[in-house]
Amino acid sequence: MLLKNTDFPALPNVFNDFFRDWSSTNFSDTNTTLPAVNIKNNENEFTVDVAAPGMSKDDFQINIENDILTISSEKKEDKEETDDNYTRKEYSYMSFKRSFTLPKGIVDYEKIKATYKNGELKINIPKLEALKSKTPKLIKVE
Image 1 (tube, rainbow, N blue to C red):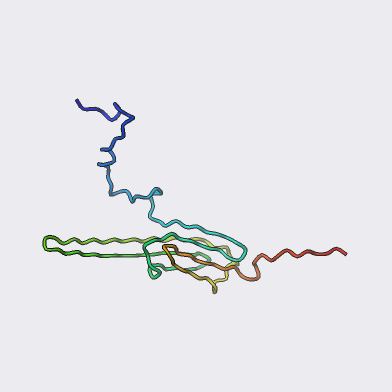
Image 2 (image 1 turned 45 degrees about the vertical axis):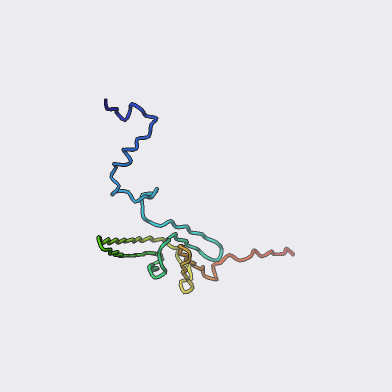
């Protein structure tokens, strides 16, 4: 006798997971291949942190045009392994592109710096000196 899936709802249905179409999944909870990005704003600068492990600094292209910061990357890898009885060829391709609108008239474009270390791309975007928050001045009443 065959049992329907609903006959024992408390038992996990292993076969549904095993036979599902794996080609449409990328193993991400967010269903995306875009890297996570954190943007911080303090009185002196904006900091953009991009989680991009397994890449090198040469894999990134960072542009600013019309107050829009664009971060993109493209990485291709080919590996071939040959033995007496078989040849195995593997390849991978990763790419992404993220864009963010920067506030107009605040950013010091000449001093922007980007570093890549331990799987994290960090972009420091300084604010113009004239617009940085200054320490409040106490004015004495006479």
